[in-house]
Image (cartoon, rainbow, N blue to C red):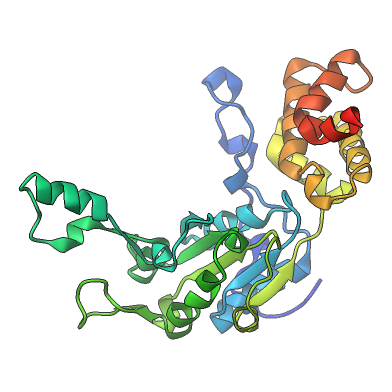
Length: 300
C-alpha cells in the first residue's frame, strides 16, 4: 500500500452498502445504488485523486466503457462529504454550457407575448462549474464532465481558462466575474472513451489516469458491495467467468460487457432463480451480457 498524507482516503469512510437500502419486504431492492458503492482496489487511483486535489488540476480518466469512470465522481463526493454536479457532453455541447446556458427561445417567446422580464438573469441557467464555483450548496463540489471526447475539440481547450484561473466572466454583468478560492475550488473529474484525440495543451493541464477492464477479483468485490446479504459466492463466480468468456470473444474492448452488465446478470439470476448451464440462463445471458454484440457474428 502506498504511504503518503491523504486528503481523500476511501478507507476512512465505510461504504454505504445494501444494509442501508430498503429490503424487498420494505418496498426496495435491498441492493446498493451505483453512487453508493465504488471499489477502490487500486492504490494508484486513490493517489491520482489526491494529486488532483492537491494540485487543483482536473482528473482525466481514460478506460473502456463500464470501467467505472463516470461513477468515480459521485463516490468521491460521497466519501468527502461534498456536493456533486454532472454534465454529460454530446456533439452539441458548447463551451459555455459548462458555465451557463442562455434560453434565447424563452426570451423570444416572452418578448412576443409582451412579458419580457427586466432581469435578464431569468433567462440563464447556471452550469455545473458556475454552481460549483458559487458553492451553491454551501459545500465544496466534485464536478463530473462526462465523455468530453464527444464534443468539438474547442471544448476541452475552453476549460483551461476557468479551471486555471478559477474565474470566468459573468454573462451579463461585466464587472462581476464568477470566482472561487483555491481552498474552496471543486475537484473536476473528466472522462473520455478515447474516441477522439484530446488537445495536447489540455492534456498537459490534467492529472491523467487510465482505468483497465475489471478482472474477476474486482467483479467479485463489486458484487459483494452491491449485493450484501444477497451475495451468492458460487453464482457470482460462475457469472464472472461467463462475462470474461464473452469478453475474450470480442476483438473490440468497447464491445465487452461492463461491470454494470455483470451486476444486472447477477441480480436477475438471483431474483429469477436462473442459474448458468440452463436454457433459461442462455437467454438471460443474451439480454444482459451479449445483447446485440453477437448480431454480426450470427449474420456472418
